[in-house]
Amino acid sequence: MITKNPTTKLTKQLAKIVKQKTYSLDHPYTKVNPYRTSPLTALVIFRTDKAAKVSYTVVGKSAKTSITNTVNGGYQKVHQVPVVGLYADYANQVKIKVTYRNGQTTTKTLTLQTGKLPKTLSQADIKVTKSDQSKMAIGQNTPTLINRTAQEPYAIDTDSQIRWYSTKWSQHIFVQLSNGHLLMQNRTSKTAKSYNVLTETDYLGWIYRQYKFSGKLGKGSEESTITAVHHDVVELPNHNLLVTISDGGNTWKTF
Image 1 (tube, rainbow, N blue to C red):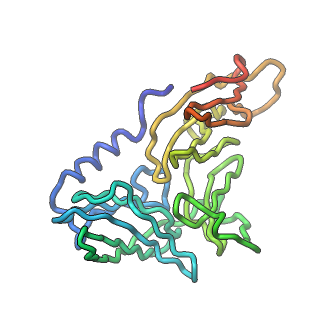
Image 2: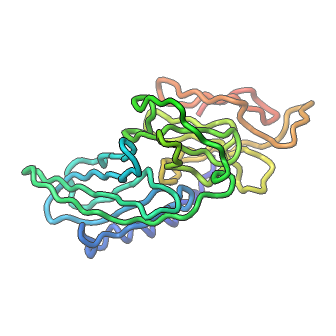
Image 3: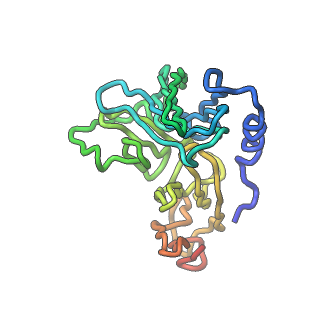
């Protein structure tokens, strides 16, 4: 397991923002791509005088493409809103809805500007000809996830618009776990030859844990790129992971 979490420093910086009492619903703190690997996400931080629960809506460009989620945690005074489902290269309208215990509600609309898609995604030929929105889900959202086997995994809505992607290239393994987190097989850098890191992350890019394999090829292999996990991960009923590996040693491991 890799003990050094690359998102720890960013988490500490954001924790300082959370402790500040200067951010309100009228003037919240906003950060697009807070962990630097999910450019179509954002984190919104603010406080309310009274305990409240929060939801958000990313306004869609067409009918039935708006994305709405409720923030976990119920009624609180300090709010960290993880926004997922922004459009690329667009001034996104995001509605933050605050609901108090007495039923009173307040809504604030934010504008969150995003950057352009990377070349590998902007040139992708994506076309949805038939869709069933009830089966297109990221949690309570509406896009559907697509794993490219290599390069950036992403998610699209019913208009074929990309509404999420990770800058961390994945190879073969891209699984949503029962806790809502993503499990991806990555490499330590885009120039590394080995895809030998199994990463548990969320849609904003915060890393919960990582497992690193040797990255060595088995005997007789002629592959030019090493993929340590071939090609499956199963989450067991006790939430341990059963992993089929190809690192020159065992053929499977559990975590």
